[in-house]
Image (cartoon, rainbow, N blue to C red; front, side, top):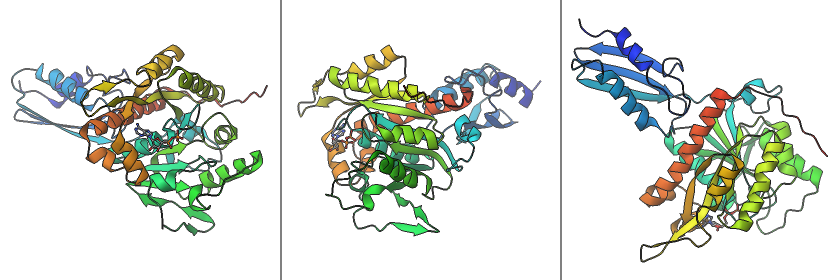
Length: 362
Ligand code: ADP
């Protein structure tokens, strides 16, 4: 008896998505099954183009199908991706950004830990994987995106009283930095900061996006509170350097998000270590500190990024793409952070039952 498509589908019921812990058929990820003369053709729809476990899923499918016997000679798998809309976005009333499926805030306990750098590289990395991505520079006190994105000389455009985002490095981007003189201090009183952030977030023509990454100001001030009130967030990422003092600040950032009912999707350890000209790795700040902190706080750890001169140079030159094209080791490390985050977002979107956030001010 030749193998049937039904038998193949039954085998696929035995393959679990390693992060979602349910089988591919139940998760509705199997979009096409074809079989002819020993050749299986499958279309598998992933929950993100930056899926961190695509190779494992592929290997598990191959093992499950080869278990049907020698008749199967070739397995062709086409992977597609459809990013889910977060439960928060679906449930939001008067959602100011209805076309944005997931909003991810990137925060840090204090300045200078590389929060903006990581936010930008997450955005560019997700876009390079094939997602549609926006980046909002919500660091309204010290907007660095004009430099990091290389926006010098570009003109801000508007339409119908709305901002048109810049399209650079494969992403859409908006920053208050293009509206002010670079060297002038931005002094906001609480309500002004609230208004400026609200305007940027809600009056930008984001269109349809899989992910909108928001670079928050450092610390635990007004902007995260405003953000949580006006935007339906999927979750937050906390950037931290490994030292003990940095961890203490990062803990406060994690707790702030938790108090605002924003899930912490993970911690990134930036400036984790340094590779010298001798090829040796130096743990300048005590590598692993942020990972330990994440474990202690019960939040995922997304990965490490070393101190890397090219990363600093590319940032100053407004050329984030080179981080992914020139230095394979740096690319691998950034990509791991990007993919682990995309995986956590998918898990969140599949598993979370939406609860209306409540803010208690004491
Ligand atoms: P924050 O947003 O936390 O204030 P930035 O992202 O602006 O920090 O980074 C501060 C400075 O450190 C920038 O000059 C940036 O290029 C540099 N930097 C950040 N991360 C790294 C890294 N891993 N290796 C080298 N330089 C880095």
